[in-house]
Amino acid sequence: MNPVQNSISFYNLVGKNPMEELSKQEIELLRILQKNSRFDITDLTERLNMSRTSVYDRIKKLENEGYIRDYVAILDPKKVGLTFTVIVNISLSSQQIEFVEEFSRQVAALDEVVEAYVTGGIFDYILKVVVKDPEAFNHFIYKKLSTIPNISKVQSSFVMSHIKQSTALHF
Image (tube, rainbow, N blue to C red):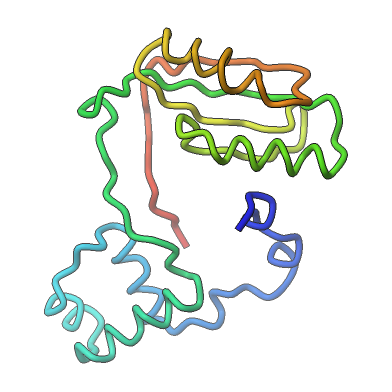
């Protein structure tokens, strides 16, 4: 799926709320799994008042319907030598769809970019870049990002400390 297709569609913003189609047990299951997907099935059956088979069936349903996209291990960046985080704001010189799609495709392929957003306002994109150090960031800018056509402005903000980082959605 390309990055443009992966973004939230306008229909989802104004259409029916997909959460309305879930049972209270399914919503609670989502809340539990997003905090820790390494669950104890006995604990889940007790907390949700469901059988093992029902819990597994509900998890499979939530995966198939796209509520659960993936399971990951969240790593400590410092432990793997990635201590430099930069927020990069980018403006494109043209917003023609083919340029936007090409930029999105190329940015999505950059390993250093851990988050990327198409935005409205002053900048067209906001990227979160995580690298080893300032030298690695310099290499990223000059050897990778600057080779992508149609960029008119790049503004970088270096993260001094992390106040909050979470993957949990509150619904």
